[in-house]
Length: 214
Length: 214
Image (cartoon, rainbow over all chains, first blue to last red; front, side):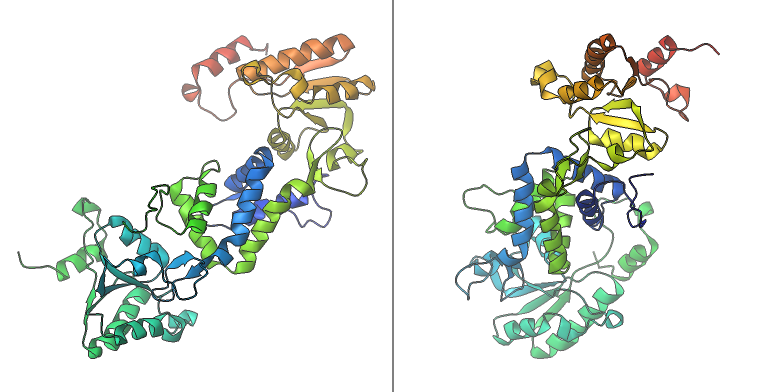
């Protein structure tokens, strides 16, 4: 077919700039070739300003967002170098309790629930010796510095219930318990509202092991 | 909650540049708030070059793509002003038959099937008096100029089987039949491979009306 590149390099018959955009969309999570193509065609049809705005927002994303120097949450770049994120700045929150999470998504998931009133600490990952993620690669030093101020009384470890998440929880517990604070782990068990027959075996076993007196 | 803008303008608790990007993703077809958020977080984690590449490709999309002056297909911007798209340039194709399509997507859908060996003409829309889309708003003048060369013997009208698509087909047929060429419409009926019981009523009625002797 005439539209295929003579070098056979291209999988789609579209002009190169269009093809490249489709391929970039495809590299995003959850976007296959059909959605990628649909998005690219959509951007051909919308007013040019809309495409330019998206391009600009993407281009500036990394420069406009910085990490909160205290908790490593994402925050908007400001002129004052010492400012912290909106959560750390909020004096109505309980600074004696820090919830330790793996990533910013988890922070916002907990925040969305609206119940937790303490502060957060984002590790930016979880321990994984196989992938070369050692304690030094995580933001544990920063957490240590916060604990050392003496203002923190409890750490709630909210890493995932995966092998790496559990290893990270164990590591943090061993590191911080000797410093005299309470270290707790969020509870794992049957999700609320789920019929027991649909719960997977491991969750069921864990929920029985973790049973509590009534 | 502290993260909500005091003016109540923001629906997500994220920093403004992040929020804006999520909103832009949401404005794309088939992308809801969950996917938009997932995409934005993904772009926070990937190497910065990847985000910059996507931004660059989006920014350049409209300047690098032009319309083929003959058939209105999209093509890469070239230095020669008179060049046409890869399809129009392809001398192995049959220039006496032109398939008229509403948009570039349809062109590539037909091209993907690999059977049609004529040329195309992209109308860039379909007649819709309610939306103010008159014949002048479509690329009908350009089609007229192609027909006037005398090289075209058949127009295959491949607009959609919608009210607007049918009206467009009828308009084109009345315009071009008096010029002495054959004007045909693609066939509508039962899709191949579909069980008859699942076919919608209108398709079923149309397929009986359009029955052919065996």
